[in-house]
Image (spheres, rainbow, N blue to C red):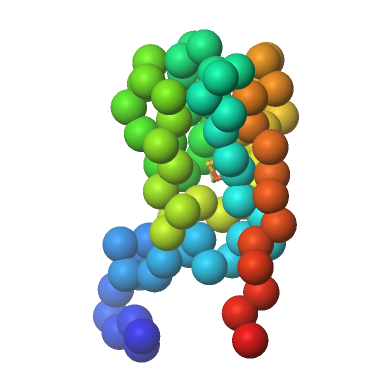
Length: 84
Ligand code: SF4
Ligand code: SF4
């Protein structure tokens, strides 16, 4: 999709999730719904605080911040399948 130069880029127009090489995956058995990951996610795309995170993969950049900050090791990064 071409973005008109008359306005700044926006993640509403561009699905930045295509950038990631790994996607975070939450283990609901380990998650305590503490919301720490949701507070650290720079994209704000981890669902409702105090619920098991529901990640919007269309906009998740795979930065791993959520995995690093989760104190319960409930998030793992899984390699994306390559598109041929
Ligand atoms: S930081 Fe970990 S335990 Fe807390 S809500 Fe996120 S995934 Fe769940
Ligand atoms: S990998 Fe980064 S962008 Fe994706 S959900 Fe975790 S903190 Fe947010």
